[in-house]
Image (cartoon, rainbow, N blue to C red; front, side):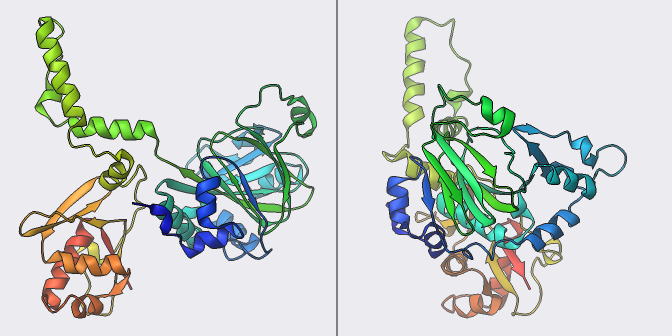
Length: 397
């Protein structure tokens, strides 16, 4: 299966003028990419006003705030009250640090701002890796974070102002960083030295060393981090498939005769690869849904009632996580897979699930009218309730 044939419009917009297919073939997991874009390209995602409101509404969540200056984190006690009944951010002290050259980062803003929630979910759906979005703001010409490399794929989206980015490849042997520590003077030898302006995008592959410097003006950018599953995740999945077996539960025959030990080893080796396809990567994603955790979804008040869904037929039903229908369901049942979960439902559920997979959300009336006439409203209500109860669907007004 070639997953590159499905190139969503939102990703094409982010990467333009580079085509999605070219990005996946030539850059993804391999080398950096810089894309110049129109100044308003990322404007709908976040503004200074929205950032101000977000910071003001989440002042108790001191763990989201990070102030850094010339490669070191500032003591949180210098801008936050951490003791007592209610931890809180002190806005004046935060601003004073920023005025003196500190960089502000705010963690996981995709949890708090709907346009960024949707963007993170789109990244997770396409790249199949957990995605988190942080916001970074700077004012002076001093760097915040030191020269470093990240343990994930990084996308930089420049929202406002300018910021200078320097990339040094996958090794910094022989790089003199003393000037960076003393005066924010970047080291020589950068593979990329580029000033990002509003609308520009920079992709940095995992393990590539980089540093960013403000330019003595307000600057604001988003950092999207994509945590891809790796070979170790796949190996752990293979072992987990074997764990329920009787052979895996046995004590190791360390004191047994050599022939018995060899027989055990051979049977264990055979059971480890039993049922594995030639394309392990495809099978891993199909059976586990990757290593990302589904984002929480609630359908209150209805999901906590015995009925599970509201009365009437005008409410919306949407999938709350990525699911797939199993093609080889047992007689009388259909299986719906969500990540590593495989849930068995009455076969009549298949038509409802197929409608939601085709387009989500749908009104309840659409599910009743579109299932081919085999299910009346009460049957659909029951089936939707089961999906909601298992956390696969959510009710929206």
